[in-house]
Image: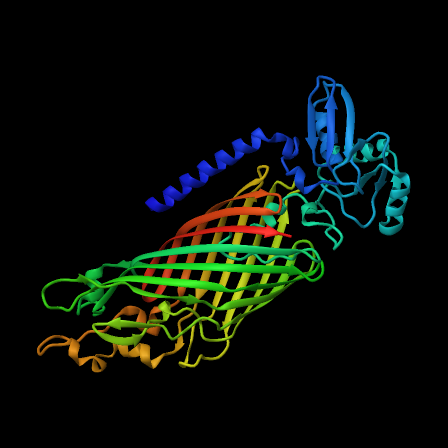
Length: 499
């Protein structure tokens, strides 16, 4: 609990610091909606008032809203970015405008683009559709959308992201929908030709034992009147590093590959029932490459995508541990992979609010372990559900998330691991007259699986194509099969770049 509170305080401090930094650099975000201006170079506008103030906004829609909000001021001039020379500001009133067409706009149902050269505007219409318009016509349409906010921007807030346009032109809220630090991958499609590289570090800490929803004291784990185990797990740490690469084959189809590296460490006490109580053991440690996931993601529409992943058994299931001078295959939770090819279908819903400041969604992922591995067992199949709510504050995005998992018991068993709990396999452990006992709980297949609901909070910061994020949380509920270590807290940190 103390670690979680420390994480919460850290997130709040970072949020305040980044928000303060954003306030110092107001010219880099839209003065009306708070979106990053770097994301909308073709829509950037400047409203210059007669009092000398200049308001930078992301679109003509926000320019109309800004002028409405400052109606007591006289507008001295209006500048807008030329579509074909992104970044070059021109007089919005004398520019040639194009409304409509297949290239979607920003913060609007009806796209509006400005051109310094009328011939360039005509060429744009010929290639993409739409109609030539004057500034007054474009502004009138934007003002009408501002009046009728209920009809404006119902999810058409993304700019078109074809292969001729860069990731910097993604629509409002892109720093939310491409969030790097979710502890669970949220699958999404990328524009054609776009790459994304993500490095993620996840740490999970487990402390103490639980059966069902009840905590189990260490003395009960080792007691002959309780569970009768010699080795009592007290703490387990799992560190996983993931490197994810995604590529947009088309605007609707994205491919993904994600290898991983895993390190497990478990601390235990040993109780030999000799009247001396329990003593500490050397930690059991395993590490190496985990399983590798490859996935195809298809976007059905702007809100819904389906995907199919295959987990390749690149993680070792041959890790060993020493117990009282004898080598055994390490328990199932200390192995680095499943040993099987696993199918992982997923369905993801994701949307933004009309003002593009809020993002929410949900995802369901099922993991099916196909057949048994070389040691004649298969990890339990699982269903994972997650839902989230995020709020954009300029380049900063805080969020809350719930994640529910339901995992089955292990099918079959590894006979070498089972020997840990077979008294006949280690008679040297016992002296005449001593009661026999089992080795340790995680060597039994019945002590795996169950349900868990995690509550998590996170924070993301985006600067151009690069994003940094952190997420932490703890279980709000966990019901475990048999006798297992209970999860205490989880933290994930990530960095991501798009190109």
